[in-house]
Length: 256
Image 1 (cartoon, rainbow, N blue to C red):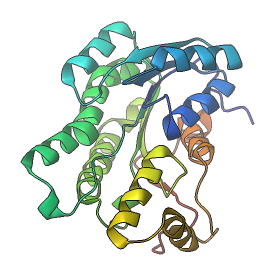
Image 2 (tube, one colour):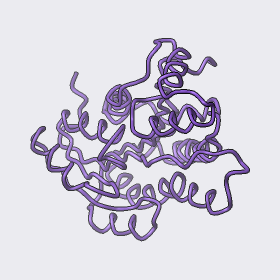
Image 3 (cartoon, one colour):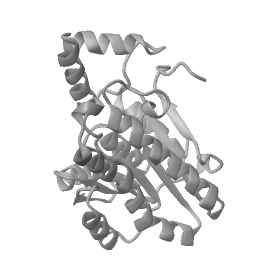
Image 4 (cartoon, rainbow, N blue to C red):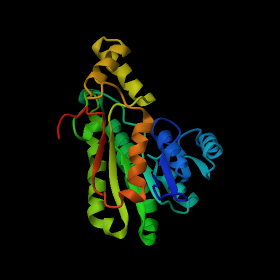
């Protein structure tokens, strides 16, 4: 299938590992040029992807929770067609484990990174009359996850932000959607399983098996399976899809 995005330019948040890197690679396979953003090793990963897929790719070491770093990105990158908003998740913990600084840091990381990136790149998309803004959230926007109070609370704000922008601006040719991954085999999920194992006096393998059994497909996702959904939403084929949160969870969430 021709997704109609060859030659487009995409900014990929958290593009050096996990879901972010998978999205970068699947987009590159479709001929999309990349601006890969991460705190570390972005240039190395950009070179690897450029050599593998014969696209243009640049790396930018930046902290997306930092307003000055996002402003610098805006100056370095002359607009993008596809904006994939993706950062590491906030720390786990119960409410008594979290202080004001934890809440403010989580807001900067998860919500304000989205606000600042959209402010940096939306105007240029609207002027061209074409763009895709896609935010990676979590199944926690449908069903809260134990010990992820920060993520459960703040990711819903990102979902509300993109839905609001769809209502206001989608007629301009820019679509706004979220992807809500289920449990995916990334370093982040492995860390969460280790945290759960410690609190429940269980092994890592026991925690992983318990989660997998809650899905309809009885396994965790591979990062590229999430990336395939992102790439479809970024494509010309998804021009009439906006304002939605696409759950990609193997049937983990039981509600309709």
